[in-house]
Amino acid sequence: MTAADSAPRRERILSAAASEFARHGFAGARVDRIAAAAGVNKQLLFHYFGSKGGLHRAALKSLLERPAPPAQASKAPVERLRDLASQLATTAESHPALLALLASPPNDQDAVAVADEWLARAKRQARQILQDGQRAGYVRDDAEIDAISEVVVGAMLGWSAAGDPMTAGRTETYRETLLKMTMDYCAWR
Image (cartoon, rainbow, N blue to C red; front, top):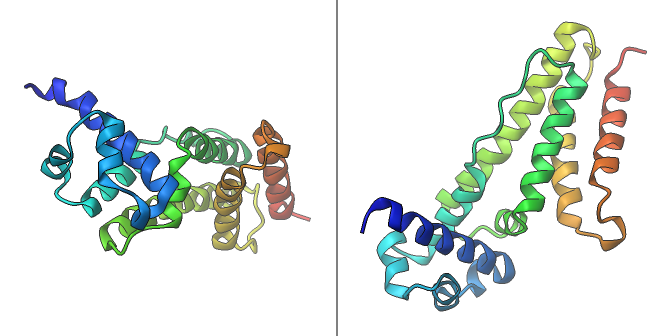
């Protein structure tokens, strides 16, 4: 078997694992169900990932380590924040298992570290955008950049996690409202 032959199988396993962990949490997830959903035997899961914790960590990494499109420094801060907010919402919406995996990490420091690094990376991006906005005069000097970064990232992920059927399809409206509030707060008065 070549690496090309095993790639789709590995992707099926990771997808099945992400769904199982999202539905049942780490403690309730069953390796038998993951293997059945992926169309492989349970021993193959242990061969690839070593343990249930290793499988959880790999599923989490597969969702969070997708490269983000590079931010264009030539755009205005509000456009760059819009891109970041869209990226967060798209990631969360296209991978429903993501937020559940983040919310219920197992007693596995490696998995917690993967989730923490992903969140930290998103907050660093928001912070950098706002700092660039300060240097360019778009954002007032006394704006609490760290707090604003936390709010922007947390609000977009929280909105995605809410999954309220009454607000389905309104992500763009929500994102625009969040950006307007953020930039209004940050603007010179």
